[in-house]
Amino acid sequence: MRQRVGIAAALACKPSLLIADEPTTALDVTIQAQVLELLKDLMKQYSTSLIMISHNLGVIADICQNVAVMYAGSIIEYGSREQVFRHPSHPYTRGLFASLPDIYDKKERLNAMKGVVSDALNLPEGCKFNPRCPYCTERCREDIPDLVQIGPDHYIACFKEKEMEGKNVDYTAARA
Image (tube, rainbow, N blue to C red):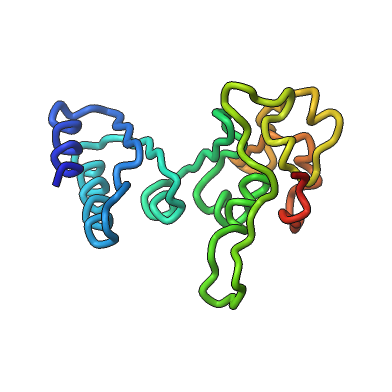
């Protein structure tokens, strides 16, 4: 109920943009679905744009048209929901999708990317993902990649952008 009240209060002055930071956290699946439907209905009713911040890929897939994947405070992949979900191209984005459970796969353990997320107060030089990336080169350790267009309205921040398109990635081989 608090989430609903918060959403209603945020939309009371009919803003052109609503920023929702983890609006479904700690909600059960039924209430989560109701809150998401409420957001969608109110966005249509008030012609409001929404920036959804969430770790829940299911929520993002359900409500967002465009997706920006972030790592260590920077956008590392951006595109339409279909582009990012069907053709993830940055090694981190691919790692995220590879770590999702698959009900048809009988593995006892989930896939996980090697290494740990960098300390925000002590980020590595160059690409912030380089300590965990299976494709890291010296250039990755020294320079920060710009977002580069790899398709229609699809961008990644990776020096290996040409090689990453359509390539299967072994995330378990990443450096620790």
